[in-house]
Length: 112
Length: 113
Image 1 (cartoon, rainbow over the protein chains, first blue to last red):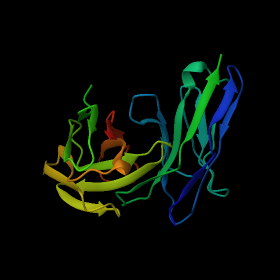
Image 2: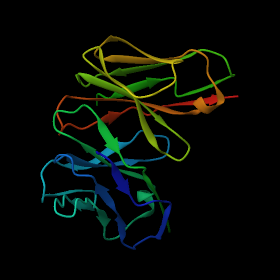
Image 3: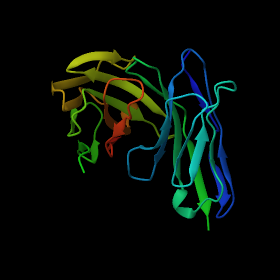
Image 4: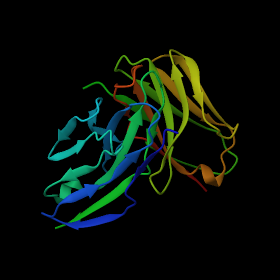
C-alpha cells in the first residue's frame, strides 16, 4: 500500500527541549516525502520535502532524513519554541501519481 | 504572493440545506483538490481535478459534488447537509509530478446545526 504512519499526538513539550515525530511509510515505490505544518486557523503549509532517498531536508530548525532502508522520515528539532505549537503531517507522493497520502497528523503543544 | 483562496471562511447552516464553497488558485497549477479535515485533524481526500477532469473521487456521499469551470477554480457543493458534514474543508492545488508541493487554502469551516 501507500500508507503513512506517524507519532500519535498530542505531544506536549517544554520550551528548549528536543522534538522527534516518527514517520514511517509503506514501500510500494520510492516516493517524494514531505513534512507539512498547520498553525491554528490556517491551512497546512510545506515545511520541507525530500525527493530522493538518503537525503536530508530542513527548514526553520526542523530536519528529517529520507531513510530508504528503514522506510522512515522522522522529524526532529533540537530545541522547540512556543511558536512551534502546531499540527505536523508527514506525507508522500508517488512519481506520476496525483494522490498525496497524509499521515494522521501530530499535534504539538510547546509550553513556555 | 499568489495563493489558494477559499470563500467563505466560515459557514453555519441547518440540516437539509444546500451549501457551496468556492476555491480559486492563482499559482498556475493544473491540479486541484478538496480535502475534509475532521475534529481530530485527520485529512481525507475527497476529490481531485486535473485540467478540469475528475481524476480521483474517493468514496464520499453523493450529496457532495465538485464543480470546475477552469483549471484555476474548483468549487464544492453539498446538496443536503447532515450533522456529520461539520468539518473544515480545505482546497489545495499542485502541478503534476510526484515531487511537486501541494498548496492549501485557509479552509472553510462548516457547522451544521
